[in-house]
Length: 212
Image 1 (cartoon, rainbow, N blue to C red):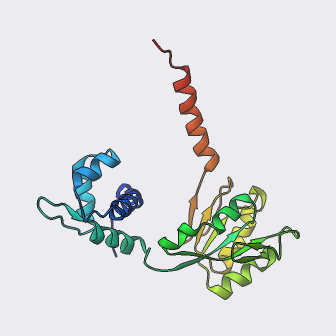
Image 2 (image 1 turned 180 degrees about the horizontal axis):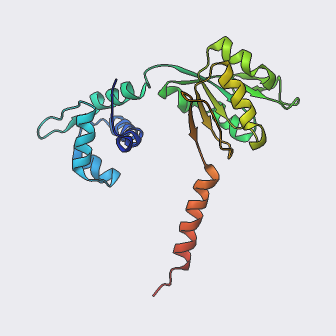
Image 3 (image 1 turned 90 degrees about the vertical axis):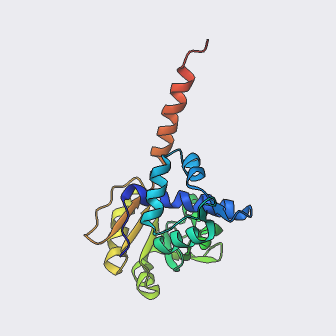
């Protein structure tokens, strides 16, 4: 199995974004120096990441953008198709369910669920909203391993329990609820409000900085 440090792993999505952008501009090669300057990290660190990915550069040219991008996609499993359910058809759930950009990374939304009778049966993108009571059966029917959770906090743990019991092994959690899951189940928390708080603190500090 491929191994890489946690810090390097966190850099891979950013590398991929840079490579995709440069490839779109017609570039074929990129240097470790360019990557280090864009990411504002030491060039030695970039070279170590490339070595961990078993990618070698060419002298005076750098790394093949196409080769490196494909290697990152292979490492992250982006070349596989991952089917997922969006659990919660509110504003955030709707935005995620209709985001076309997921498909280029291998994420395919196959269903949207909610408990609001006024939403059940309606259409979000290409999906008909299904009753939340069908969560377990839909997980089993489509062999779903990932759910995207956008429900109110009070329902998050209960629905996670149902999904995990039905076979889900990964939860992309957009709720503020701290979820508890068995060993072998991965939670990815997206703290949107927490992100705003960090930016709010930054804005407060720069606005309070005296000017000459």
